[in-house]
Length: 152
Image (cartoon, rainbow, N blue to C red):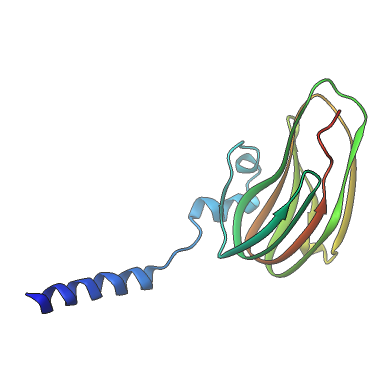
């Protein structure tokens, strides 16, 4: 009986190892689907994600990142002024984008496929919710981004 249980547990363990963990089909589809990016909720998978976050800075190293992850979220009402987001991204593999999401839609302001590492975007504030999301498909690399404080 003990041999049977040991064999059964070994078989279950091996099946678990072979099936592994990884991104879902939904997370894989987020990279190219604006309707999923516009959703308030995030869905993501990281094999490794080490980050340091302050009110105005986001730094992270990541491995096998797939999905959408919000790194800045602000409600601005009433509209007043402008904000700037700048930084650098080094992607060693996979696809990676930074997207500015507002009530009027999503705008890609950094795409690793362009071959650049540094970026800067300045936008006029309008009333409503503003978010910066990282979108990735099996991406590995690092990011260092300066974000606006809470808009005033």
